[in-house]
Amino acid sequence: DLFCQKLPKLELHAHLNGSVSQKTIRKLSELNNKNFNDELSRIDSSVSLKECFKIFDIVHSVTNTTEALFITTCDVINEFNDDNVIYLELRSTPRYVEGKMTKNEYIDTIIKAIEHSKKTTPGITVKLLVSVNRKNGFKDAEENIKLAIEYYKKYPECVVGIDLSGDPTQGDACLNLLKSARDFGLKIAAHCAEVPNEKEVMDILEFKPDRLGHCTNIHPNLSGTLKLFNKLIESKIPVELCLTSNLKCETVPSLSEHQFSYLYQANHPLCLATDDKGVFNTTLSQEYKLAADTFNLTKEDLKKLVRSSVEFAFISQQEKEKLLATIDNKLTIIK
Ligand code: 5GP
Image (tube, rainbow, N blue to C red; front, side, top):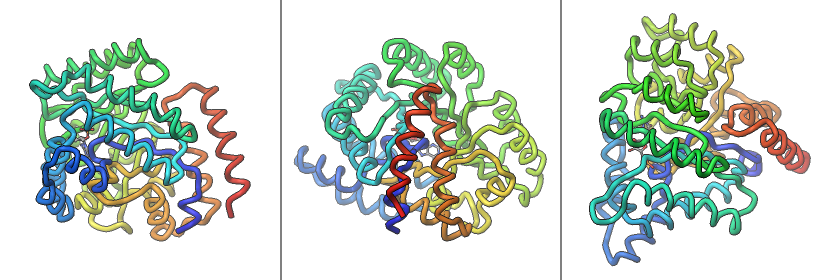
């Protein structure tokens, strides 16, 4: 849909390695003289949350050098730029690959690619959230949070927050560690309620992250979660919603039952996002189109959705005002 494509958009929930397109994987395979066709066919047939996590392992196996990571990051930024995303927060888990790269080199490479994009695609502003993969345990989480603080001090213009993600059926939410990062000024985006876990969800809501991801198991019609739903509404914490991702991972039964409609009706702060545009074969424009078609949103509603997302970006008030002015300027010329 042309309108959704032209709409100037903000992407606030995108995992770097989940956003890698098949085109980039092919490019990397040519550079390495390696054939990734098997890997690509497995990506095409992805279903269920568990399967998705296997696919991330596949993508990781092709982005395991600083060269590949640099190319990947540049391509992902370019593709979001082509989709008229004017503000992008990428999130990624620092990775140590024996003999190939350290976690510091991992983050340095992404920052280098973001710097590079300022020259090649000046129309998109890109920030980085350092991810913690809950599956990897306490020591790894502690290391990543230390790195996030180190890079936040060094590059406050670029590294703005922490993302808690990874297989939600494993590990824990490391809230004490997240608190230490927040005390330094980093913003926190936490995946929340991707699987039923009342105690943990309650703890996360009480911790009050700056944004929440998914919240699929906080739903007025799901048995036992009305209490959580009311608590979420009361908290006013913005929620990042990823329709295609939830549908493909089967964490929601259908789009019409998606929590979007309940949160939207309650006037809860929310934004649309792709999650993993490569793995789920989507774009942010498609997510807007899907929301418009499923929930009967008008063009004015979509414009409002974009404008309200600015408030949830991990940037200063001054940057928000500038972004809003850019959006309003662009909105006057699209029909
Ligand atoms: P990376 O951090 O390597 O750049 O991106 C891939 C990683 O993002 C995955 O290994 C996983 O930890 C996280 N991730 C991507 N999509 C999801 C999702 O839908 N839910 C959760 N909990 N984690 C995700």
